[in-house]
Image 1 (cartoon, rainbow, N blue to C red):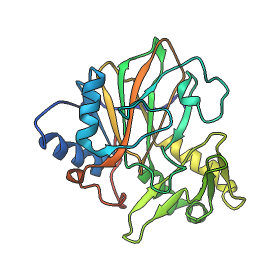
Image 2: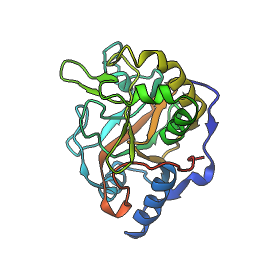
Image 3: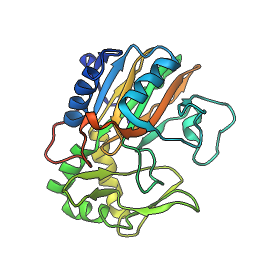
Image 4: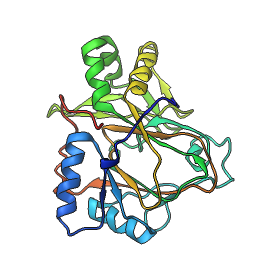
Length: 260
């Protein structure tokens, strides 16, 4: 995880709750323009759940989620060294998108902080649209390899082959990436991973979430990770498909601006 990330501007965060649909209008505008928006005022599990239900058509159930659909992202002390469970420890997480094993990954990812750690634990983001724009302009051969239908295999025995960069029939794009032990890349893809990682690093930015602060991400566009941490850091994660009022369409279009 690079340590030289650019801090996210303070104005990134906007208060929640508010009257609906006004928050959806503003959140949708930020997501369409930048791929990410910050929220403040999510100080309890119930407020996180309320916001998540307002922003999605329903929460996607995850292997590690509780019955209400929210996942506690914290060091459980039970998962060190277990493949696919790094998020439940305190080590750094490489930038990735969620749901890469799913043929239709969830569009929205919400990460809300209930309790920051003692040190570290910065949330790191990178705009996949900016990465794609650089690849298409400077390394078209890399972009071509990464858009191949079998560019990567994500998951275990029940995983799937997938492009890293996928363009839909409408011309919109989607990025799917993980960089842990559950990612394998085709021989034609592997020579281009270094430049992909370099561009992701150059586009990364970070924020230390305080109590009640959250990031809402277009999971088809923005990669996320974290730095290692100490202390009893607790985030809640929600995954779901975007509420139609957000008007996100079927992917992100180029050119678009960076979320800085």
